[in-house]
Image 1 (cartoon, rainbow, N blue to C red):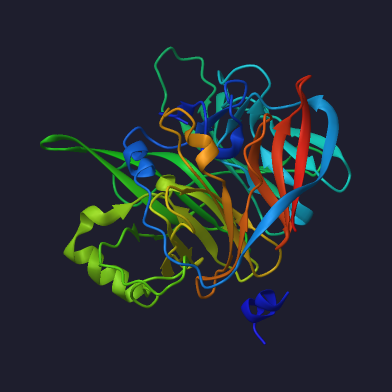
Image 2: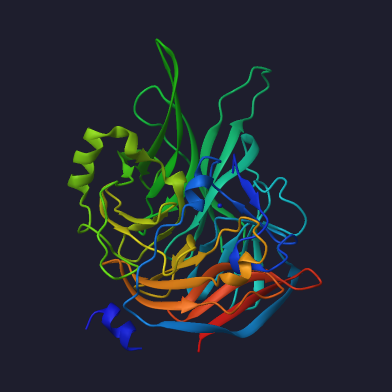
Length: 411
């Protein structure tokens, strides 16, 4: 019996501050979310894909417990939240304002030990003016960060930035670092996103700038870099425009999974469909050796360490008016997607929508369970991580501004 059957039986540069997203509360001003996407992405976010009649029952979630911490809680949360073993939450947040989020420490909120560990931007000899571009958590729980830095120099001339991949110790100290290699050709790059494969190699994405006879050409890239930071292979991530036929499930729809060969053929026909990893809302490293990317338009891409996009699924919202805004692993073999209504400011609209979670078996794109959040409450919670297919943790702050994690379970 496969895991799906068993389960049936049992957010830098152009960030946008949104005041309210669905169930984050009726008065969401104290808790703002920094969504790490470009301005051009917002219209796409507001266009919810049509839902379909689910084949699995919808179960209600209830608040099982509130786990309280003595550390300050979030007033601003960067959209990119990563998850570690046991549902540990890795997030960048501030208790005051969104300014200088690039230098705010990454924080690991441990559910099991009821502790908070900080991972600051480190000082590295020979470099200065550090800025964190991205971070990710490996399958073994190791934290990595992608930093921009400048070589220290006595010269007044401006030097080009370099990009470092930092590996942290469990206690938040610096373990080691490596310098990211260059792409083939004469292109200047600005990496913006980092994901770590189980074998220790990296999927890095960002923008490129190249001087041409006609001026300067701007582009995007997604590429594989090995464990030493050297370029290994390019990756092309694409959005498909083929029409979808309803399968009666909010999970996989339309044509069978897209193979790497099909993607390459389509890319030759229309290179404008290539998109960087920066367009993905969330990603995580899987024990199967691949990286799973949840795109803004609801597509789930599975990328191998060799640079091939193994499969692509289209995940549909479980109800009308909802948009997928977060994805994370949900125990071995599963992932969950959190859907909510993107508020437009219409009076009373939040009370008409309840956030929902779909549990997905990523090997097939099959939705194995659907959960519905409790009605909107007066406090605020940001979807974060899961310890299992039935244990969901949301990041929040209490009335005094202290950190708390809300634990939800199905009825």
